[in-house]
Length: 162
Picture: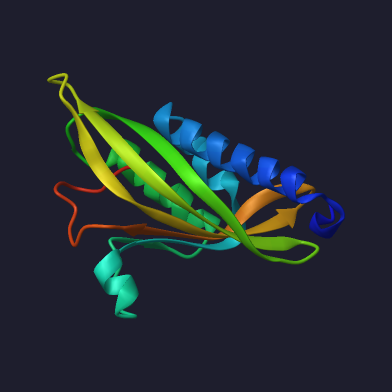
C-alpha cells in the first residue's frame, strides 16, 4: 500500500479504523492481540503532559518492542494483582500530519472511562495519542505510540494499556 496514492479521506478512514480496532481490542479485554497492532521494533510510551512538555523521559509505561508488549500482557494476566475493572475508550479530533509513501504521523485526543466492580464509572485518563504509523505487510501498524496523559499522576496502578 502506498499512502501517497490514497486520497486524504481514504488515509483518514484507514487510520480511524486502526484506532477503532485498537481501542476495541483494549475495551473487549482481548489484550493478547494488542501487540499485533505494533511493529516488531516499536515504542509504546505512556507519559504525563508535564514530563512531555519539559522534555523529561520519565514514563509511567515504556516498551520498546512488540516482545516487551507481549511480556507486559503476560505479567498483567499472571503476576499483577488488581481490582477487576472495565475500560471504555473514546478517540476524537484526529489529525493526520507528516506523510510519506509508507508512513504517517497522527495525533488524536482520548478519554478512558473505567467502571469498577461496584458499578461506579469514572474518568480514568484523558490526554492525547501521538502516533507514527507505518505500512507493514500491507497493514497499518504503530511504529510509535506516545500516550500523553493530561494529569501529573495516575490514581491507581496502570495495568491495562491506554
